[in-house]
Length: 448
Image (cartoon, rainbow, N blue to C red; front, side):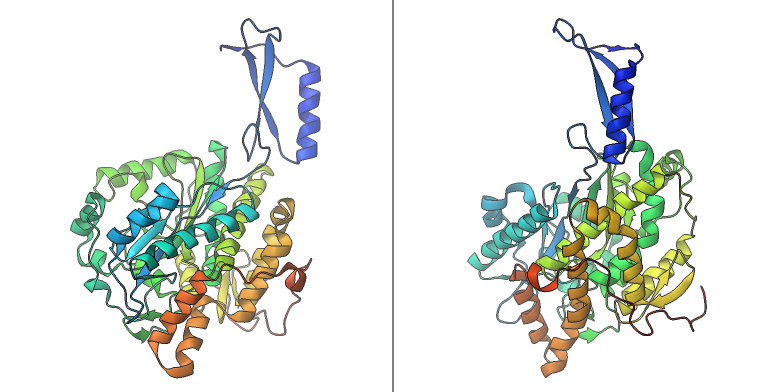
């Protein structure tokens, strides 16, 4: 089919304008497509920003995560990857993959468009991996770190890629027994990806605080809500991304990093938010793996709403502050240290605030996108539930405090990983953000 240069008739441009208003997003008429011998000789193909040709405004997502194999007797890590994966593959296919260490199982969820479908997939995949693990005498657990197993005692996976990582990073690779959750958000607008990334980076810290689920390391309470973030942050290309003035600047940096041996390919950039090389997606990698299905759904859908909100800001031509990466690193360090129990950095206001106030600011920012997809009630309620019950890190500490046994922490993680949902719409749904609590704003703290 050859594209014609024929300008669009007035009726076509009028229809596009009406659809743009109805869908609240711009439509670009890409030209005429010649269909050859068909009775309708020309049609117009519309590209709807933020979606695909057949799903206007839809921003799709997928959320791969890493889980651990536990010994049911000792609650320690168990190198059962090579026994669990073949069984899991029977029901989940290529949705399950090996990871760097033989105690790790990666679940690579398929693309989904709705909260309901994301929930179904996360629950289905966990059921499949749990069943495969139990068949070989193991348990599956979702926490950012193991409470007490020594990381350097865990064998590296046999896959050549992981052998290469171990050769390059040496002892750092041996210690990297950590478990994260990544969310990929599809955005079919190549020109908007960098401007969206520049905005998303400002909101990574509250997502980390909500997901924080790794307080213990080698049998010690680290004092951090997400010690996984501290272990990961030691790697040379980890942490928040910088600000990019253009896609060309981003691509030039990738080329330079490849040329100097910093990375082998763009896929080896490990920033907490990045642009994958082969797909039009924004990948957010800041979260600890979530202990429960509810928390995984909350983080995935909040991330989709954040990307869409940032994209809408790009379309409106709103400016974004080029906050330096050093400030972002401090913001994420605060989130990793205190989670939901301390102060977070409000990068838009340039000051420290109570964590609850920052989470409310995030919810307020993304609420229109959540409402557009019909997700507001459930996500807002899940955030409330997380604050009331405590983050994964807070619940792990509570389990340890009850009897002083790290094995009890392991039991909690395994139990909550296998629990599919605590969500009850009739009990917790609501239609507005929670009210300000006394002292939420840390006004007495110095601005950053």
